Image (cartoon, rainbow, N blue to C red; front, side):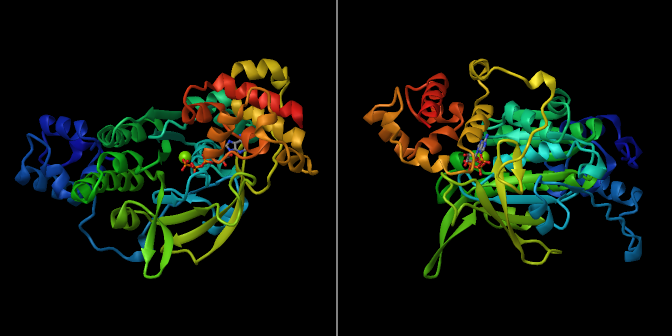
Length: 418
Ligand SMILES: Nc1ncnc2c1ncn2[C@@H]1O[C@H](COP(=O)(O)OP(=O)(O)OP(=O)(O)O)[C@@H](O)[C@H]1O
Ligand SMILES: [Mg+2]
């Protein structure tokens, strides 16, 4: 990386202004759109143009050179599933933006968590030994999930957590601000993956209606440009998750990512996750389809969501250390909801016990009356098995007047029945 002070004709005040706006190196300046730099208060159009052009000249970006000299330097980060890595031809690519879009429960947050761990693996195990920035707009980041994934990959969970720099985001402007801030972090902390889960949630909520569309796309454009520049400058992989909306294509209705052309064209890889064909309540099998990638053939694969991230099989073994020997009840008290789920899954096994649980009514579970059962049904929870795979925290948020402790209690009582 080249220091901003190396740019011809730049002064200390201009360096400070650029740094305050997330442009921390000559490379970042050279790749910034003119309009972004010109808008920085105190710089002005003429200075912005001079500095950008000088930065490009200094970096040799204004020469044509033989294609044989292009240094692509792409590295790959494993997704946790060999099948999914396969359709990417190696895993998520560094230096590029990858968009994963899909409906509710399709596995986007699980992929975000898995990659936050695998990025830290050594090269021979599918990682790049880098740190991670996690921009969490939906409050779904889970330390417990990271801990389990770290154990699966035989990494120290505390160390893994200490290399994930997470920010909970409350507004689209906050999101823009943290994307700008991410640049300095990438420079100083060997960040190799930036996750934005999810890209559009806040924008969609804040800029509602057709009248706000142009404004929303403007903000989005700024974010995508900043992320592309960071990805390229620091050879960082960027994972953007996105929601879908149903669109009419002539006579047909199809799910498509939101955000329009700005996201579609800004991302190098676009992958769709699907629950369709598999009931997302009773199966954790998912489908991934390459929708758009300049260098990849059309392809699709199946993968699973597990308690320890994305995988090729429904069950994966997590190596246990002596410190993992625990009393199950004590564990419930600690509130590790998802480990509870794993315990439950072990009880169910794959020998048909899960089928047995399907035949028991929710109202048979101690503490669940008719009214509560209806509220659970409204959330798509129809069977005991559905109840057991829920995260207590998430479910408590969706059902008014119910705490995560209460949900845990139901899950304990439900387990007794099977
Ligand atoms: N510990 C666990 N073990 C097995 N499956 C789990 C576990 N935790 C969550 N799941 C499953 O993962 C799915 C949710 O996946 P995820 O949160 O990645 O979806 P998403 O695509 O991010 O959805 P959204 O659009 O709501 O954010 C649910 O079907 C849930 O049952
Ligand atoms: Mg999610």
